[in-house]
Image 1 (cartoon, rainbow, N blue to C red):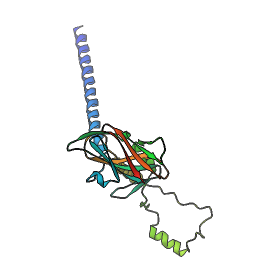
Image 2 (image 1 turned 90 degrees about the vertical axis):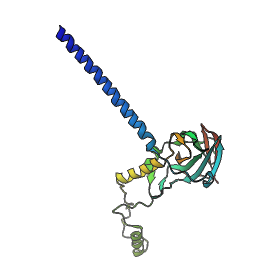
Image 3 (image 1 turned 45 degrees about the vertical axis):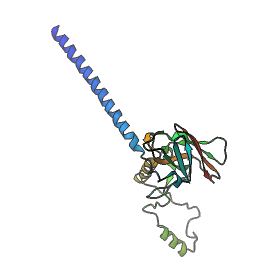
Image 4 (image 1 turned 90 degrees about the horizontal axis):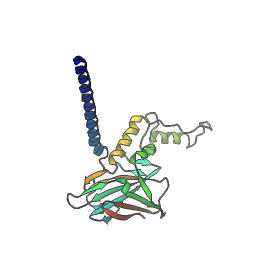
Length: 229
């Protein structure tokens, strides 16, 4: 009986140890995830002053500045495009060492004078419509080669089959993933941040915009910026 009691005690102790070890592992994983979170989106370098943006307005002690980029996502490597979303570059400025909790959901966009503004959308939704106009597939003729072919045939497609369609370009996953990472890193950072901070925010809209107003309603207060015309 004494032996059985000792065995039960050992089993119970092992179970407690395993539970504590599991909790520790989960805690460590959560801490690692929290550490990775802020790094997922580093934003853009803020411009020197709010006046360097298309428009700016005051929200409490914070200055909201913005630039409307239409369907383009400017990038030092190349300008990406998205036909399903419009893009606004936002910069937030404050007094020295000022903190502000940033969230893309604090922004909305009024297009073409419509009563209901568009809410900002997560950057991940933009991925499916990303394109690089300068991208050329390895087996695709360069622009110069296309021009030569057009000249040689008199700019016609007489030799092409009547039912022929433009070839489907299969872009390697590594390329599209690179585009996605660029958008992710350039999107507006979230959480408690020391100002100034800047980044892109996205709004679902596939057409043109005759008038654009960016609306901010967040911890700093409220502000409306006229970006176009």
